[in-house]
Image 1 (cartoon, one colour):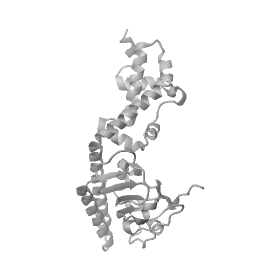
Image 2 (spheres, rainbow, N blue to C red):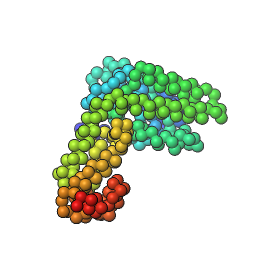
Image 3 (cartoon, rainbow, N blue to C red):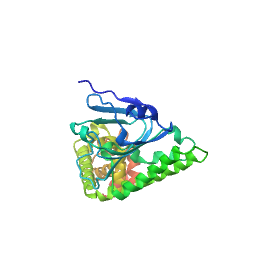
Image 4 (tube, rainbow, N blue to C red):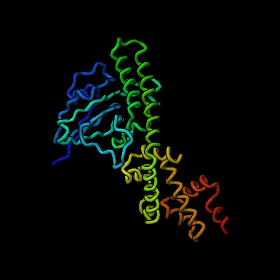
Length: 307
């Protein structure tokens, strides 16, 4: 069976049509009642790419989503975030015909943000690039907070539009994103055990990468590659590690690399160039520059200190 090609949703109106609901009341922002959506699946699947932001809070979610193999803290509400040009796919199951999903989908076209502070600051919220499996699981109290903000946004764009309308909605959006960031930090902390397991897996991946000479063949390990091996998005992995250890994924890679370099500098007669190439560097100068930035010594100075 050929794979389903994604439908491209360019406007908020396209999203409404795709889900077989009434046209939006505002062309650039819309709060959709999740219980009212009725998309027409193809081969029991939905797949689309949208050119706008969407923030969803749902219960009894229709379709088979993969959220990883870990246990979650709360099951009252499930919150997901998508940025423009992200691929979204849902595989429907037999049980979906009898499910009773509820919740909201807030869709915001980038044009609505033009000329506001959020047009640029929205890029700092890394969770907008997380995948569905990295959803935010809300407590009942947290869900109430988010629902109130969503209702405030809807009330404002349904009112008579005036010179204050856009900024009031932007303020509410910034408040919603700030709460989401807080709740993600709570989730990182309450799932500390499972996050430590991910950290252990990352450490083992890096150990294997350098021990098995993968670096010689493939070059330096990348954040993208490590995240993919852990079945996470790069942004989620770095956010989780930052919360847990204070270091990003790139910093963890550099730390492991420096550890390996120190061992070789202190226990072998390999030249600095040979060590650099063995660790995946194309140029020894790049290795020496990174080593000094992390240790305040050149590789030669470090080696000399052991003689």
